[in-house]
Length: 351
Image 1 (tube, rainbow, N blue to C red):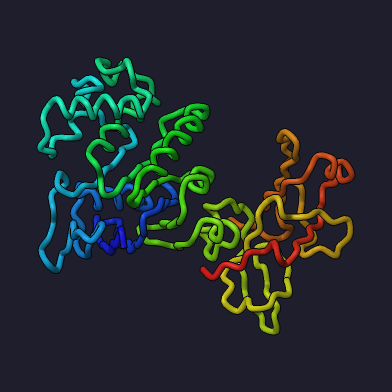
Image 2 (cartoon, one colour):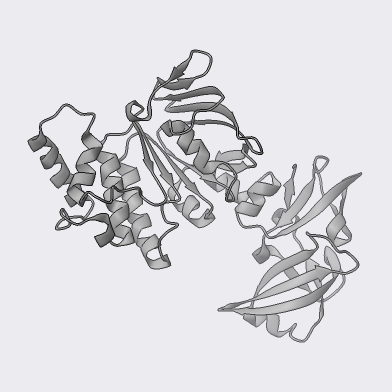
């Protein structure tokens, strides 16, 4: 097991209680701000000491509360790319990169040779004497990554690596980062709240909510069929209703004022459906009738409809529906819409 982690840390008003395992792969921690993603990385890196538990990387115990082990950050071999990159402002690019080799007993000439080769690999040629303030956001990120990689980390951790970049640079640097991750032989962890980036980059995803692992799965399975409210929300669902099992395969959708027939739904706490999977109906034979059109939004090649359920007022009673413009033409002017949901498009969530 390349990463074996089980830790608990009480911060007073917030408790981090996370268990994770990963082989030599890219693992993503997906979650909203403040859920504990970045704090998990800091615990692995040794910046924050857990109250209890263990952290083992490549068979090496970095922390174990029972055994009294807590290796210093400098000796952990954990490469952490911070959101702000944390380059030394008083050093140039060459000096920043060479600082990553402090723990190695090699000559200055060897370090310089490694530095030159690494700068070439990260497209930093010609920037050797530049200070961080003279670099673009993308160049700063590459310099920070280069410094980490020359340290030969056992585990690579990236904390919101694209959060400070504009959309064009995000895409460009994402491709470069994927190249780095493909070459890295150990476990990599990327922290993000962007589901698209997470899907493209990672192999497995751990959804973090309120300091705990809410859901862990292979990425295609998680996105196709999330099992919890948080995992459905973070993978793109906008439409939720609380569910109540009535018996005989009948489920009441509390917030949509209707019922559906659904096998194996005894444990349903919520149902969810993605915006593009809701179909408009002309008759009352849909799953839910009586939705009012509150807003119509023109969005390139589609129309986004914001609907609300009649006679129900709750945080879940509004629906987000996306339809092709051609399809909407035949409904234009309608203020009340009936909906049809195919069973295969409905997600049953157990918590």
